[in-house]
Amino acid sequence: MARILTTARSFAVCPAAQQILTAAGHQLEIMTPSRPYTAQELLPLVADFDAMIVGLDQIDEQVINAGAPSLKVIARNGVGYDKVDLIAAGKNNVIVTITPGANSISVCELAFSFITGLSRKIHLMDHNVRTGSWSRVPGVEIDGKTIGVLGTGAIGYELIKRCRAFGMRVLAYDLKPNQELIDNYQVEYTDDLDRIYRESNYISLHLPATDSTRNMINREAIEKMQKGTFIINTARGELIDEDALYDALDRGHLGGAGLDAFKDEPMTDQRFFKLNNVILTPHTGAFTSEASENSLIIAAQEVLRVLSEELPHYAVK
Image (tube, rainbow, N blue to C red; front, side):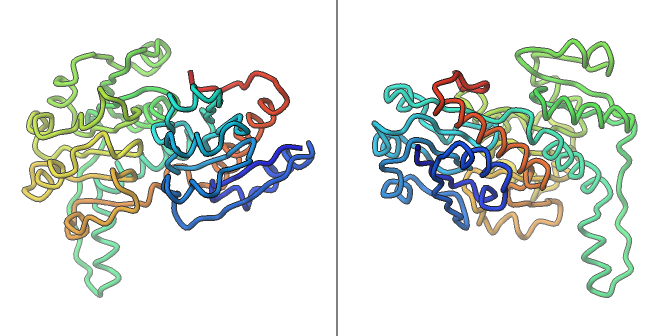
């Protein structure tokens, strides 16, 4: 019997994922924090566990060392793994897994709702009606507009399909262009980010946070964008220089932003709360019943494979 610590909040309400592990005779310690754990909060919790199923918790070298030598696998409930110290995991022979594809539809649908919601100023008119005003706010159509999609993995792929169905032209950036998107959806790939910044009316981010992508949306990049461009981020907050973004939104250079990811979460930057051209959500892209269950089932299956001395399907290399 192995001991498994779960900190992914939705695991507590996912009997299907729990059953996968308990049916194999393993013991679960289910935590339900109100927000992701910091490394310091995790330190006293991780000793003597064989596996962890985690959300956006900070898993640094100290946490992994505290879990060693019993810890064998850290299963991320999602596709991002920038919160996990992969070097420390490797040194301690801890396998790190992710759940690709499980939340692709949910995240892409949120990104698309940002596109339509910002374009038609739905959040502003909802406020008007609730406060007794019948004032309409003029919006813009997305038909015929250009969207730059940065990252065409599973989420970007699904978003592109929807954008094309609504008559949008798609420019795309990815280290590995998808030939199906080129052939079937007329996607124009380019490795020239400046071109995407110049030509796009909307820019949607679907990249991991790495040394080459952090703060890629900075003052220089924003100044290359057309006046009125909308920025959508359902990926990682580290992709955007938030000071530069605020300045561009405040002075009206950018048309608006839909933000589901932030450098510091929970997001408490009061400046953004005062802007009427921003929609803010609490990192909820994958927070649908379908995506939560799919992702947690995959995470549980990966843990079971490792504990059974089998190779996981989605290990981070």
